[in-house]
Amino acid sequence: MEMSVIRRLLPDWGTTYGPAGEGPFPSVMLLHGSEGGMSGWAHRTAAILAANGFLCYPHSYSKGGNAWNAGHIEDVEILRTAEALAALRKLAPGNGKVAVYGVSRGAEHALLLASLMAQDEMDGLPDAIACLAAPDVICGAFDARSYRDIGDPGWQAWDPSRRAWTWNGSSDDLLPTTPIEIERYPGPLFLSVGLEDRTWSPDMTRRLEERRKTADLPCEAHYYDGEGHVPGSEGENKHHGLLASFLQRTLHT
Image (cartoon, rainbow, N blue to C red; front, side, top):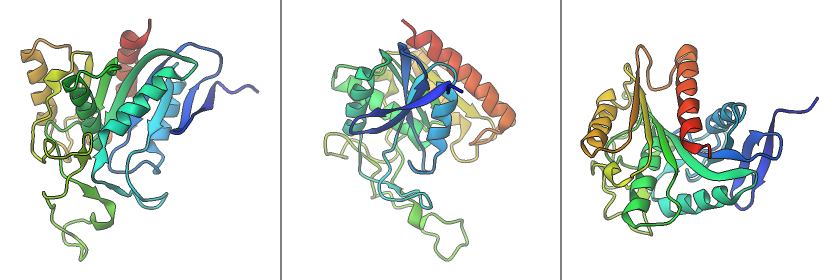
């Protein structure tokens, strides 16, 4: 039996999942959330999108951790993500167009990547950005080793002095609570959120949508009734259908 989805190596970066055959296929970089790069969730989503015609690379950017521990999101150099994006764009059998899709902290990462590349007028901007459960401001560092439920003896308050992101070696302009300047990115943007999300308020997505509309920039937004931060089966099916349609429209040549 021939497999319909196969893996291909992205040299120096990791593995991709894509349709069998020579292509060309539109490409998608996936950015995980605080579950970490080794949890497998981004790889699962990559395989789902690959089954629908996309060449997908789940980019692991969390530091440390392993299959049992998420690691941490602290002082992550976003410029390195831009380098991975450029490598994916050149990978055969891609068609030269690449979207970035992020979930939760990965959505924050995707928005920052697009806005910072646009700010510095870098070549190779993402051809589209897609987000599920995105914050509209920069958030602080996350360390899985200290993440506990309130009341747990190991619980620690959030330390705003710890920075999640750097750009070209500096975090001075990426302080927690700073609004993400998504108005800098001129390309198509897909936003989505569950209306029962208790991690990132749906109002964050509403504010991002409003800012894009005010700037007269392309934005497609979806709000899922009854869904939380992680959609259930029905909600995920709906979300993936809308996401795949958006990617098809924006990435096919």
